[in-house]
Length: 225
Image 1 (cartoon, rainbow, N blue to C red):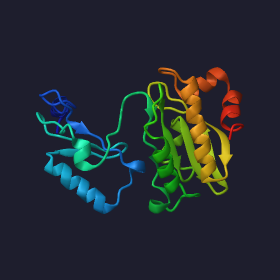
Image 2 (image 1 turned 45 degrees about the vertical axis):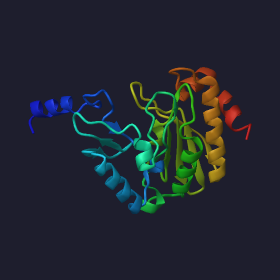
Image 3 (image 1 turned 60 degrees about the vertical axis):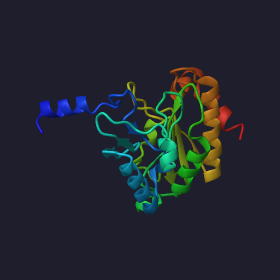
């Protein structure tokens, strides 16, 4: 396909159908993991509902053909809530291949990522908070570009804060090594509380920490456990 044809195809594949309804739906799949049986059922149901193609990697997005749209009750039909891409709130937890799928992990992170997603995904905030969990320093889930990052280590979990991608990328900095999953969960909860208090409108967590100072953040998330 030449460049002109590709551009024309992209222009045609808009996210809105001719009737003004959305052509796409992104189901929330915690940590991106599904049993094969559930995946088969999901694909079969969406195919019946007219889905034409799917985008894999990051959030999974299903797309209806040009001129068609996702049913208004698609969440009830497939049994999955949809991802919310609005700016505010805690986004789905991003996880690497983890111990089930990769031999390089230095500490278990699969259940940790699932617990974090269950506890904090969807919490309403004025800012956006992204969480990345990786089982080793290869950091395949890119925790250093997330507001809150966790990296599995032989002696615990390195915790990072203040990263983001986007228009003005910023690398997170390590602020603590947690000894247990529960300690990670508690600190992440406190970090989100901190964002809820100090991050207004478009101010990300890293920018708020720069403004108030790292000691202020550490006093809040570590001293209050």
